[in-house]
Amino acid sequence: MVEISLHVLDIVQNSIKAGASLVEIIIDENVADNLLTITVSDNGCGMDSEFLSDVTNPFRTTRTTRKVGLGISMFKSAAELTGGSFEIWSELGKGTGLRAAFVYDSIDRQPLGDMASTMSTVIHANPDIDYVYTHSYNHNTFEFDTREIRTVLGSEISLSQPEVLKWIENYIKNEIENICGGAI
Ligand SMILES: Nc1ncnc2c1ncn2[C@@H]1O[C@H](COP(=O)(O)OP(=O)(O)OP(=O)(O)O)[C@@H](O)[C@H]1O
Ligand SMILES: [Mg+2]
Image 1 (spheres, protein in one colour):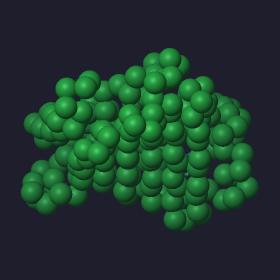
Image 2 (image 1 turned 45 degrees about the vertical axis):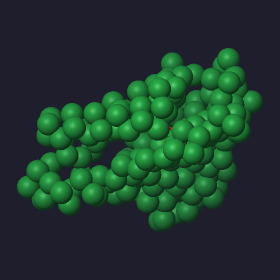
Image 3 (image 1 turned 180 degrees about the horizontal axis):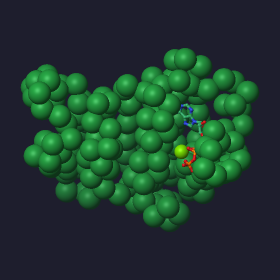
């Protein structure tokens, strides 16, 4: 995978397949600690402990179209390749969360990629699910919550409308630029 944002796209897809109604994505770029930490959590169907203990094995999948599931194992490998770490937790019927920590200045760290367009792609494909996107760069943070957008738009207007998606993408892009203060 060329960019971390593509892993995030895959991982959010898992949450959607798991029937989540709310997916939370936290990007934490901490240059002082030399870590880029990505956390994705959902309120989907979860996994039992036996499945969870082996989920980073590519042959653990509930896919029916092919025998391997690569999303989680590739995300884990990408983080570990930089000298970082990976953890996953889940509770059946409650939800799942995972966290990948990348060593920020590792030459093996993929670039974060375009999170604004990733979020707009995810919302476009699944406009009825709610997302909370939090991005921090050192101590600057912003949060984007689709539930707030829905309150403003009312129930008639879908988040998948092109004007809405464009607005969301631009908003996230500008906020990321603001918190990074020109560092990206
Ligand atoms: N958020 C989640 N909630 C519940 N189950 C999950 C979640 N994420 C993954 N799983 C389970 O773990 C399995 C492995 O996930 P993984 O992303 O590694 O592969 P996949 O989704 O099966 O295939 P691929 O990602 O290659 O399309 C999934 O098939 C699913 O059963
Ligand atoms: Mg997957």
